[in-house]
Image 1 (spheres, rainbow, N blue to C red):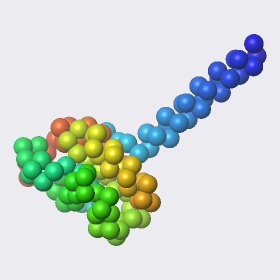
Image 2: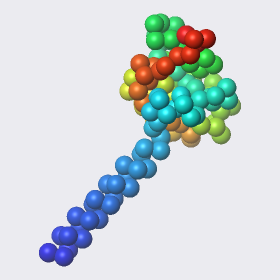
Image 3: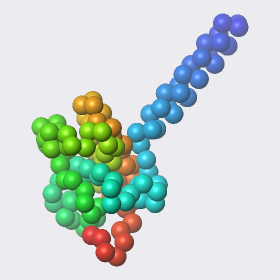
Length: 126
């Protein structure tokens, strides 16, 4: 009985630690926009060109590399390898994949969850 109780506690703690460590590579758009984003922030937009210039707009200064081209265009991001790259898309799905691609290639990357549908542009943006 003690062994089962120990195993249950062990799995709960392990799961909790895994979830906490995973959340370090994800930030909500609202938090990103209010406390991270400034003129020095490296933003990678992985949407299509049509989406980038479409109704949801884009973040000024964002680098546009569509998700389907990211793996083959990593060289374009080499100068940012020592910095954190914040990855955005429409909702957070493709940017999560983009973040994983970057991390697998030794970049520091964070998925901006909520994406551009959560973006609150200032009057000068879009």
